[in-house]
Every structure is written in C-alpha cells, then in structure tokens.
Image (cartoon, rainbow, N blue to C red):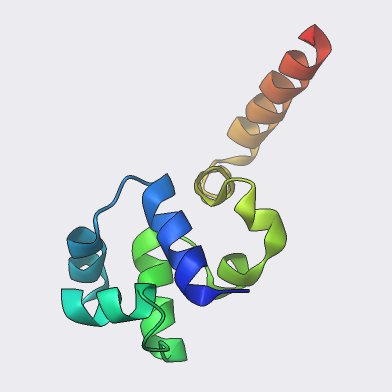
Length: 98
C-alpha cells in the first residue's frame, strides 16, 4: 500500500484540502505535502493524527475493505443499534430494487 496515495484518496473523498487536513491534524502544511508527494514517510503518531482528523482508525487506514467508503463505515459505527438496523434495512431495500 502506498501511504501517500491512500492519504490523498481519503482526504479527497471528504473534500478536505491539504491545508485543512494539516490544520485538523496539528501538523504543518508543508509536512503533509511532503508526505503526499511521497518524499517523507509519516511516523505512526503523525499518521494517527491524520486518521483522527479523517474520522477513521489506523486499522481502517490500512484495511482494504475501508477503501469502499471509509466515511460511511466510520459514520455507521457512530449510529445507535436501532439506527444501524434501520440503515441495514434501507440498504437491503435498495438491493431488492435492483
């Protein structure tokens, strides 16, 4: 996995600029740019700051399944049990239509 590409992908999925993500993560914009340009490797701590800012865990960052849509995965985990059931029912109804 290319960490730089994954970071760019997740940032773009959320419509977040480099500057905004850097600010959210508490790192300099130039530091983030170097990571995204693949000229600098982030430490685990720095990567965890980015993940926190993106609303995902480090595990989700490296998990291929999270590439489907990490925002939805993260959001679904924050729902109550009843809300998760309603969401699952809704998704099932969409598949029934097709």
